[in-house]
Amino acid sequence: MKVMIRKDAKGTLSLYVPKKDLEEPIVAMQHPGMWGGQVTLGNGWLMELPAMAEGTTLPITVEARRISGEV
Image 1 (tube, rainbow, N blue to C red):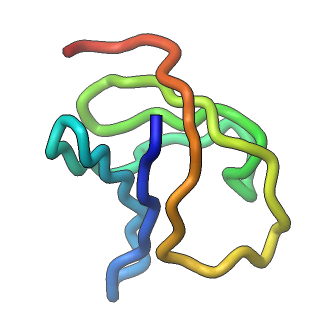
Image 2 (spheres, rainbow, N blue to C red; image 1 turned 90 degrees about the vertical axis):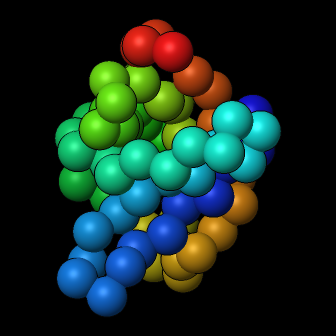
């Protein structure tokens, strides 16, 4: 699914799912650089993000895969 990842002025990362009109903070990351691993959202969803360069600028729209979590 297409998702948008952004960082607010305080440095908090969030993930927005347009089809569900859902925006949740990223609360945990498998890798320090976030890319190419799994992230956990504030609502419990586990998402797999694509591998990208460490310095990728935000906001960005990427293809991610939902692994598990609440609806």
